[in-house]
Length: 436
Image 1 (spheres, rainbow, N blue to C red):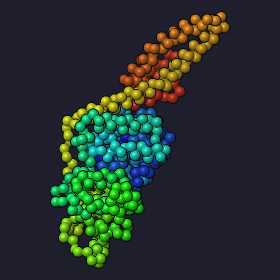
Image 2: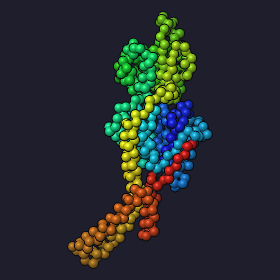
Image 3: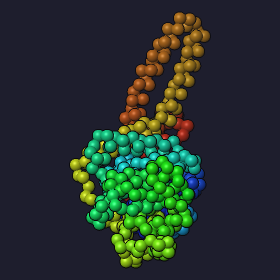
Image 4: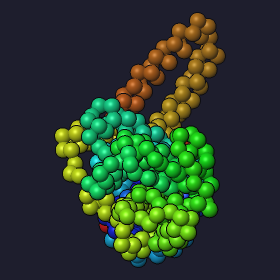
């Protein structure tokens, strides 16, 4: 199942709050109950999603999964369940795979087709592995999501049509910047988003770029990318003197404010620098937000944040989107088919174990009666193979129709054969569409 809140269902302010301490949430979900088999949390600038594998009767699975997620959110972020009400949806069964595959492919992003989300989905699974909260089925789900994303990228025009939030932000800034090559740029942050931002800046023609890292990784990043590093002591002054500041850190508190810029401007003037005459811009790509909104009170500064960028997101590329969604639907159907086949495996194993046990007994009796050439054994094995063919084929057919539980019940009724573990076919879980 999946509990999902995104830019389509929740406010930017709530998504920002949900993105605080996301790494702590999956372990809390997993620890909620023995019924929870695993949890993976995907938290990005425009969505928060908890994917949870439950081992519970279908009548209770949804309620327990939602309860585990909301309690984990409250414990990790301090957001009570009532604040989240009305801002999330609950998905179950086959629709979970189709949703995640669409998310990983950029179909659910603010900017349809943007590429960063695929890496964020992969990192969510890696985090779950590190925390020990993944599970066999969640592993399969997220690995197939990455395959679906590659399929969309390779077989449709969506990846070529889609633009990332970084590039959209720079396009919005383009209307206010006459000459990118004459721009003094400060990049705050050194993660994967910072690398994408740097590449986009260079594509626009920016040359004078420096980087600052609140966590102290600026030197390594700067050396790798051939730019200059800004030490902590020089950060405020550099921020005040830059024409463009772009923040993209995972810091949980703001890294830039009107006070920081004012202090930097004062230090700059004291060092003999000329007063600023050009307008400057700050682009905040962080979530939680990296920039205090009070910077907008500075008369010569324009602030462009994720909420503003979202308002300017372009319309979907309809043809590319339709083709990509078909790729996603096909991938989700294949995922469900494999899952349904697995759902009937315990019943098939139980049947074959029972039959082969009887076969071995009859073969032993035949040998005791003098079946020296093995002809009776060969005939018995051939007969068993023929007899098992139809029940095996029917098992897969019924599983594909979401009727694996009926197959298991029939075996128990007719032959007294019960699987070692109760089957749990994803397709047999009824659709639950809960809006908070």
